[in-house]
Image 1 (cartoon, rainbow, N blue to C red):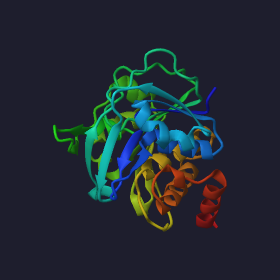
Image 2: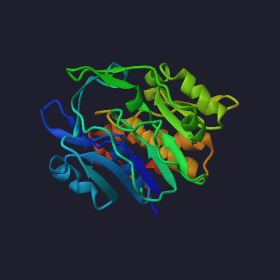
Image 3: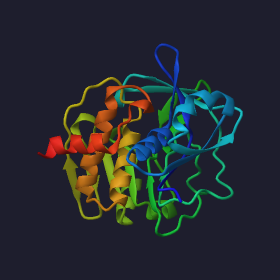
Length: 278
């Protein structure tokens, strides 16, 4: 039994110097979950040869089910935050979830490039916490791999099943109907607002949870790290406000470097939370 299972593409993110770092929502989020002390795993697809070396440092702390594909999803990001421009020169294709998935107490749906079909997901038991970061369902790309965002449309069966949904402020503008549906179904919605913290929406209203300044190098994966920490804290029984503060700290600490290697452990997150609340 895993504590945390992330579903989606592990990616290779091309850096300004031409090097590649492993990335993708599932890798950033599962590493954060593992460093919070959970048994974490990933189900993904890609080229095993291309991913062998990039994933080697993480295999000791993650259970990785890598389903072979001819290519690995590659992203090229230029700029930061809402100004980021993306291209997708390679795509690993759909992630086939047929067959048995590892049992888990928390499932994170983490598509980055339309690899999960929201209308044909597995049925998760009622006691499983299901969270989603829907960025990959908003994305489309043209023949040259230039990525654009489109309105988010999810089937009612999925929005009714979600315990929590995490989106960026930019993504939320294209997801108003989905946000309303998740709230109506009793789920929480977190909208991340970079240095301004986040806004938490539930069926009855909203709260804003601020954050503190953190040293900044790169923000790739920060939203995924926020989501992982938020989902874990909620699953552990924290209030939505406390879970948001915990997630803000985890995401803020990740800004100090590039790639998932910079992700910190629970003790570091708790110390950062204490500094804000003291």
